[in-house]
Image 1 (cartoon, rainbow, N blue to C red):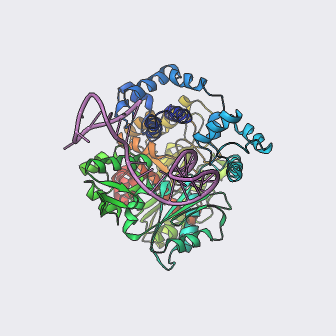
Image 2 (spheres, helix red, strand yellow):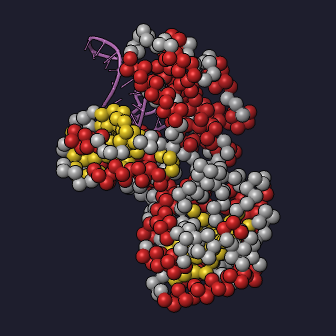
Image 3 (spheres, rainbow, N blue to C red):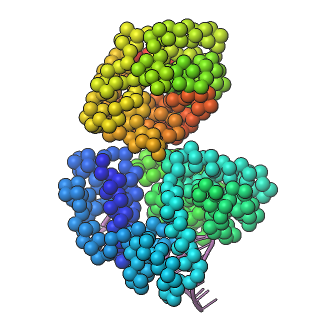
Length: 569
DNA sequence: GCCGTTTTCGGCCCGACTGTTTTCAGTCG
């Protein structure tokens, strides 16, 4: 898939144009296009084939041509030309916090510095002193920016970001003078990975709240601190921004700080058409404040439905909101059960009874215990003989626990040839069968895809679990032909799983939206190996919401009887 | 370079903080 490559190329063009001090609107056009392409839920090559590139906001005649050029030749001539006028590595300088295009150009023009290593040695030799506009403080900032860049704090998974955010939200909540508090930014939009954390507060005494914020024990460094805004870095290297506004502006500020950037720009343009101006303090007609206390009143004023944060990516949601036809996103309350969990029969920490009680406590009306199959020795997979005993135990738990029905399930291994690890005789006894790949990840895309399709063809397989095999920070997704799998799943009435386990999140939001478009049902499971993992469903819900899913698209929102009917082949 | 309820030209989202200036440019979000 070329989407990210093309987005990156456009972003680089934007940056080089910035250094060259080209037309600022042209610069922004490339940046906007890059962001729009990143947010696409469709393969850009397929769109090019269908001739729908121009439907992407920010893609006009010229960029359409450039995208096609890239798809056909692997290059964009104009970009290659542009690169020639700059030394290799110059873009690297822009990745240093506090170094922007102007500084990069200055460093290059004055000292011929064109990469981070060169900048480091120039600092060490004291060469930056004496350049107009650069003094001690700036040099220090650049040096610490380089250290940060090298520490390589890239993005963190959503789950880690939530933990960090809560460590700030909790101590601030209830402070005297604090009226409202919320996280904002990509965290509120529940993106899969987060760069930094935004916190917004409504207060009449901003200085006091900001002071409290910067003095929290986990703060290691104050990056900036003004009267209404402050940025800090934690000992873990996570940047947290706090912004304070008066209560009247809270909705406008929340809207603004939640983003995404392209979404905000689009909204402000719509406001301008209506003779209004939006900033983080409110919506104004002339100088008169007309809205801003809540996000809802701003959307209403702009003539559109409330748009959930997870949808705010400028990928078509604004038009639907104007028509009033947004999907009603699934919530955690819609889930009636978990269909992928493990017990101590295989590699889980808890007994079936403990898992069942934990599920009941969450308000679930069913939980499937889907232990690994016999071939997966490393996970203590169950032999056919074990299965009989396990089934008896489930019956016992079901007799004792009325509120939450335990389903007799398995996560059956798909072997390297696409065969299943239990016979059909065994499989047909289960209430629910999940199939998944646990080995042979390095096979070709075609072979991996065939394995999964073969599993779909089995009439007892109800769900395909973690289809792309990715494990965050450990293993990249293996390549599959997702469109082929969607087609196979649809034909065979096999559901695809959104695995909520924070390091998997497989499928992702893009996959969800695609599957939904093609009419394939999804399930949101946790793959829990302990009772406390069940709570991770919130992360699967986050993915599903970003993937535009409603409760209707997700099978485990159904009552038990309906669920069992719906998964039948 | 994009875009159009001001439609093929002439606009283009908006503001806080810092460091370097002494009124503002650069960076960031």
